[in-house]
Length: 276
Image (cartoon, rainbow, N blue to C red; front, side, top):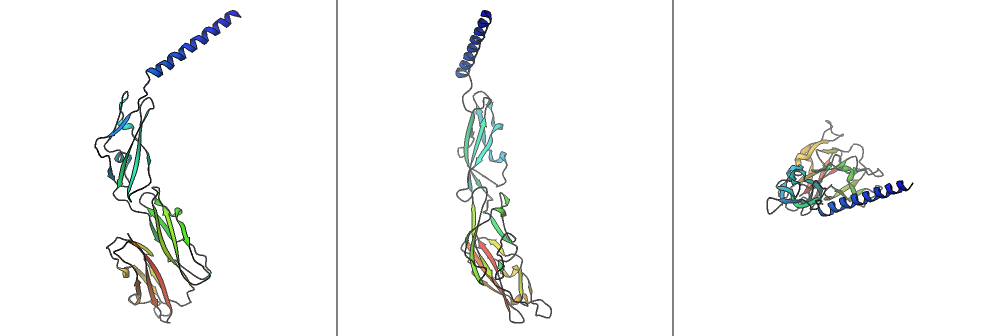
């Protein structure tokens, strides 16, 4: 029994010594210095496409470590901040050496081809009195970064009654993965269209243009139907277009297309124009 106790004591002492030696080595000799990421240019800001690869985001960056040496190929994109200054973001990078020490670096990235999320309307926002007002069957949103983000569309202001005919203003918003929000006002029309009324079909019901770039509004008329006419068709050139668009000022505007049919019934439809 005494021999066993002696053996256990010896093993314990050996373990303590081994632990102490390991701890001492790690404390005095282990690599505890973090690697360094640096840019070959004094200004690390770069301009890239929204589709830039990891290699493009890392352009001009290098990483070195006191033990592992050149570890540039280990640089990783850690995170991307929300958008600021309309088309810029901060990209954060990280690199690890052989001892798992981390080095970090941040740079400003300017997206050369960035655009805010855009909306599209496949049908007019026209509903009958008492009809359920829905947007999901006709309003979509897309983004140059995320693609289809229609599921993220939110109504931010609703002030309409589907029980009363009239024009109502609503606001919709959508936010992409960079935190950039696009919000536009839309006009919803509630009315009952009598049997035999003419109708106007447009190629689009929501379009975008740039400041200083007018649109040819007649080009958006796809067809005019007039059930009371002998041919069943209306005369496109008789469509009256009333526009509030100021092409010199960014904003959202309504263009009203009106047509009076053979029986005197009138039909109106709205094209929303966003000037950026």
